[in-house]
Amino acid sequence: MAQPTLDAFQVIGDPSRRKMLRLLSKDSLTINSLAENFDMSRPAVSKHIKILYTAGFISIQDIGRERYCTLKQDGFNELQEWISYFDKFWISKLKKLETLLNNKLSK
Image (cartoon, rainbow, N blue to C red; front, top):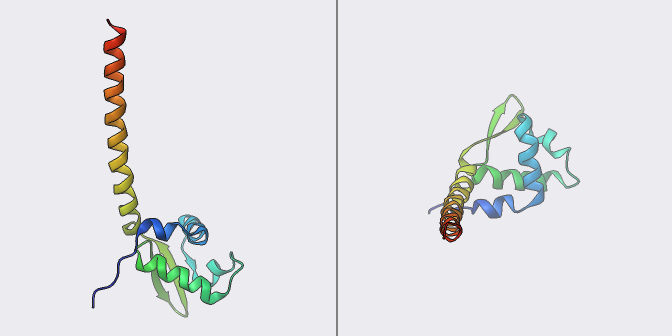
């Protein structure tokens, strides 16, 4: 059975997951270290971590008895592609507006 894909925007739509990503942008952290930053149960933190992992935003590596979370680029690619598409869209629209205004001003 195919794995359901997670929408990257839904993944980052949760403030706790965004905070986890910000914390992990500074350094890899153990799941316990990450959990210390939140006022929620350890199982709730684990649920958020699983979502970030499944969506490709983080990797998890077992080192001894600890599990370390590290940022991964994969999850951010979907966000970047979406933003780049609309960035090009708006640049094109603004260039057309600039051309139109320059033509009107030169008349």
